[in-house]
Image (cartoon, rainbow, N blue to C red):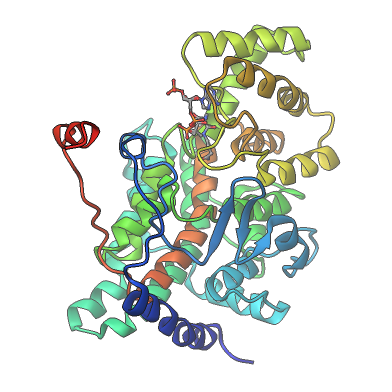
Length: 434
Ligand code: AMX
């Protein structure tokens, strides 16, 4: 069978004429116009990026390479002894656009396996991080430190052709992705288990091995696969994806770019929201002395949060205008596997209680839950109660999508990103019609 890299090369050669033609013949076609509200409003909605890895419809939610999430979960090859798809298969899909066979997913598993060993200095680095460092800081620092291993950077200095940039970027991406579960689980061991590390098992798949290294039994392997897959990509404009793309656009290698994207993910309005959900729920449970609250008590708690000027973590979205399908998938899993979990019961009550309140308050454009409203509760149920760690899990998943994006950025020769900024006075001149 054809190797992944050869398949990718063919796809790249087929794709290049499409972007080249758009650029050469249709470069002046107008796609969007920009208002002062958008310039001052976080560039919300401006159509100014391109990604073929995924597309987010405000009503329907994310599609990976044209497939909805339920389709992705149905069609990807499943892990042996599990019900969830192989993360390796997802990477194949995101990279090539083709739904992989079992054999094709196995090839990715094999590649990851060959590259997963961490250099000793990464363990030493994690050991040396100052106490109380947030796990996202450690995760980002470890990725950044691997920069010295970059194949792309070596090749660049040796002077390779621009047309070949994608190749060492692909190699760097596989090398990095393969190591992320090891970095994350060692970070966890170091912070919360006195540094007691569980060696990886080369016979397990990406998600299975992650669960094994976390020391958590079934179905946590399926939880990990599901988690990494739903978090992999959310088109190109969100903070993590955009940061990864932006940094990579200066020809910073994958290590520099992914470390940067992880830092963007670490903010409470983005990836950190899943930790914030748990913190918020724990605060609620403390006030309730561990009892599941009544609906009225829950409403009051939601209003108190809003009235103190805070957001309800896990609700709202910058693009989505319906309940997040990533939320729904995790909800289905929870209904099947942990329906009696008290925290899940509260989350499910919030699903009914929060949207009408946000609508009544009248600020949030989307009152519905997002991915983060559910993910932490599942981790909690399977024993990961150190919720600071949750965003690291998000980061592993998101790296898969961003690496696929960056490989394609290099393949299609996307240039340095450099939008233009204005001053307030210039905007005032526009406002006055000058
Ligand atoms: N609770 C309370 N208020 C909210 C809200 C929420 N969950 N979501 C939006 N609002 C408020 C905003 O703070 C804003 O208020 P302001 O006018 O006083 O500044 C107003 O509603 C309009 O915001 P918006 O246009 O609906 O959202 P946005 O595009 O500016 O921001 C997001 C989107 C996700 C940051 C926001 O909904 C939010 O803060 N949600 C809570 C945090 C969260 O769950 N983040 C995770 C998102 C998914 C992810 O990236 N992992």
